[in-house]
Length: 211
Image 1 (cartoon, rainbow, N blue to C red):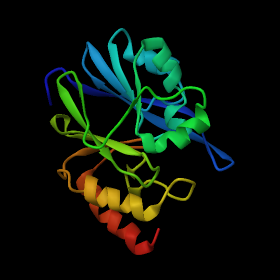
Image 2: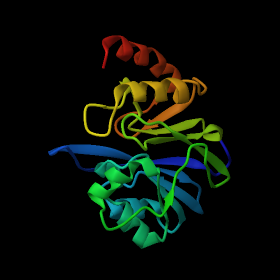
Image 3: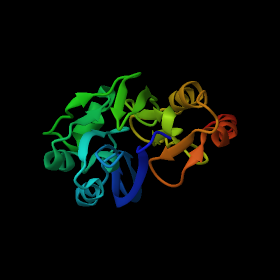
Image 4: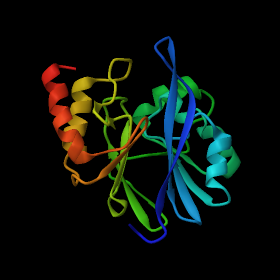
């Protein structure tokens, strides 16, 4: 691990709404950086709690792994408080507009883009399936992957609602994530962490079951 750079974890609670339903959820918010500068991955539910965790450090960016409301609902408020730009893949703009119709993201995420914080590079991997503009962030020097809702401990993210597609998420995981080093720790959008190696057999099980 690069000296000084670290991964911090915050859990926030709220609701997820799509297709006319609403569910209570707990979300993982990931903060990557050092004592001076950080990025926030998925500003979920509670801008006050996230801002408190950031403290007086410079917030370089608010990165959205996708635009389901539970991952972006606090992003505009956090941006207004800190001056940090909100970054989103453009394929998720239709979902974003459902939550924030009057406030666009500040910049686009693109496949292969490098985000740098505290001397650590995070590579943007476009991994559609759970949502059209879903991305993961790979930080090799931290041995970490931030998977949003693309990959969880036990299998792929959900694909039963609008804007999602199971064959696409399987392709994303197989081609973009399972090719990473097996020891890579997967920091997910909900629930506990896992590793790339631990998830490889689960993907085949899901394919065989036809989900």
